[in-house]
Length: 140
Image 1: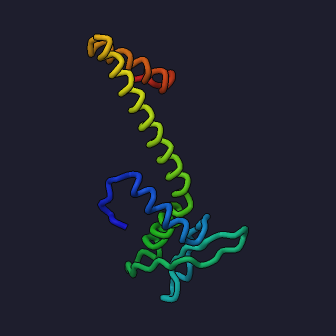
Image 2 (image 1 turned 30 degrees about the vertical axis):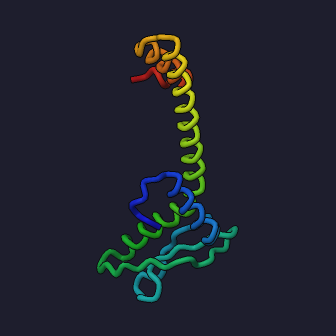
């Protein structure tokens, strides 16, 4: 995966492909044996009350008693668990933006052909935005 990808659709497709190949969620972080080098913190895939080890997190930071590792494990587990929801919401938002852009292009073309001013077009767009956002769109 390219960390510099700015194409949202491509990024969503890459992440979705990775999700499909990974261990299903939900994932949870756990603390292991603090005084031992065997397992300090980890991530498990939960199936009911049973967890299956997915990864161990060991950064070797002395003296933090697993706090850094546990924070990393929490982040990775939460990201895997909630990524499908975020991708669905992002994809839906992108589709909404695309449809709104098409609608605005159509309105712009219609207003241009009828000889309306850019101010008229602007006010029409404001009305559309207010209708789309509802009462929250009027707050500043």
